[in-house]
Image (cartoon, rainbow, N blue to C red; front, side, top):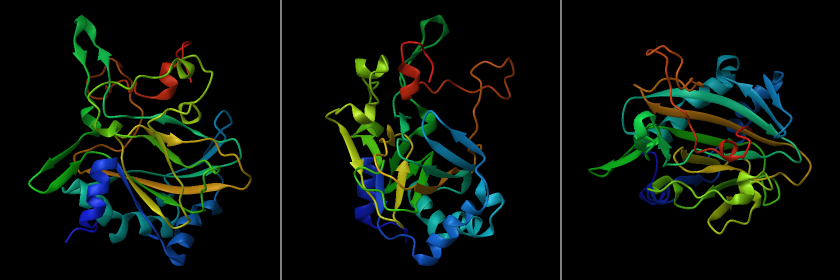
Length: 262
């Protein structure tokens, strides 16, 4: 029996994510928060974030959580293959923090020789014989309440199934605003309560809107994929080494600024 109901599977397929309310009880929340006992590994002043890398390597309660049957069962329900943990991290966001909109089903790229590509196969999700087969799924466990002004998860409706590249507004291209603050008619936000988990198809164009209130926004994220997928890491497009070459992930808000940087 799948760990997700038919209704939850429908929501995941139709929306690109499903919110599991009250997924973590008090003990689960305490386990998830244990990474906060250590100093963060990185801080990003431009976006107001602090990040803990691979807390499951240092905190037994986090490891038990992200490798346990509840988390892996939810992931397996939409992967339906032998799976592995690809990535795990913790986030803390303060007032003014945000997360750029990123990923998206469709990439519009022109390769050498004029070859045109408009699919992102690394993030695909296929359906066959009553099952979903997702290549990259993330479970985001919220450790604090996140209301409408708290920097909630936001996404572009339908982007995980889009066949055309996202038409980035000119105001985003020229740094006049963030997509999450642009009032785009297809933008949606998802306020949550502490203990809720979002099961996310990484093909969805998503991020976090600007936090406009005091106090931290805390979350623990764990990404899963089929066992043949490698752990997440940044890869150079053309390193001169066919064993380590990656691809440019251009469907990202910071890739579309006029000056080309974030």
